[in-house]
Length: 85
Image (cartoon, rainbow, N blue to C red):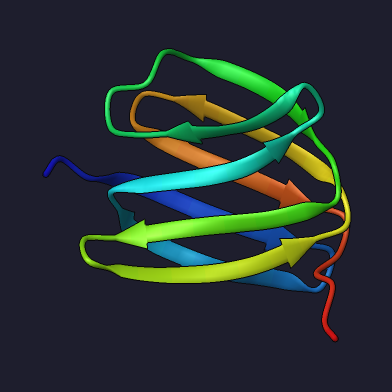
């Protein structure tokens, strides 16, 4: 499965950085997933779960809000904050 670079940043620093096979996010118009070779996009995100896929492994992070930019097989997600229970 093809992979791409992903980085999740918060005001407190980098939360995640590495090769991924997909990232699912809570867009303001609904949840969507980015995979390798995705078209360039900039989107606002609302509070919800971000699912990071690394092959068969999955990492879940809940964000308050943010923005994501995808270009040239690189995803940068800027989260306002990470929500913890």
